[in-house]
Length: 252
Ligand code: 8X3
Image (tube, rainbow, N blue to C red):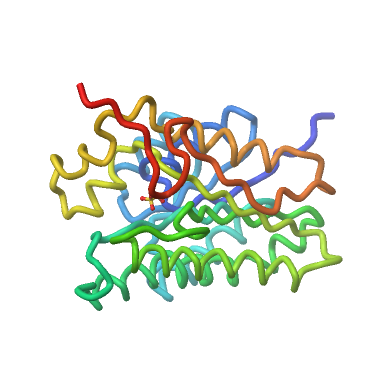
């Protein structure tokens, strides 16, 4: 008799780290529910990987309620990967846009809170649940122009650290993965409002920034440790990045 597959929910699954995590989990034999706003991208990922999909925006209470219903009526949930999030702008604090700060808080902090609250009962019920929170090195230290993103990621990190205290003794691990410089199709492009030249400049002269698969590898490694092993927090950067403000660049 073969064992039933483990089942994971991955938010922000339409590109970057989320999509790479879906691919990697499927390759490891997990059932996966891929969640994102963009139906066309999700459909392509489903065709490629065999993942199930739910179109939902983690900043919408109604969407998350519908997501939780759809996921929990479809089977057990062993892992939630809270990956949806992102940065908007690099304004100094003095000129930071309130709208950007609000939007970053909503998706990174409240988005993770909404989905985690919704799925915790199901994660607990399996007797071996995992909550993964994709934060950032911006959750651990700051940098000029990081203001709103750093504030949101610090807050998101504290969901993970607080939840771990509150769930002690229960069969649910809480894992934070904090990536540094990862070159993905969209993270910097979104941050700079679609300005490709500014987005590319983030990685200029950097010898091998991380790629989404590097982070997916870390996520899946933590999930596939024996369940008594809780990787509380993992900071992962490219070798060329020593800190949020010190990056080696060639000037060819
Ligand atoms: C991405 C890392 O340096 O843009 O989460 O804040 S950084």
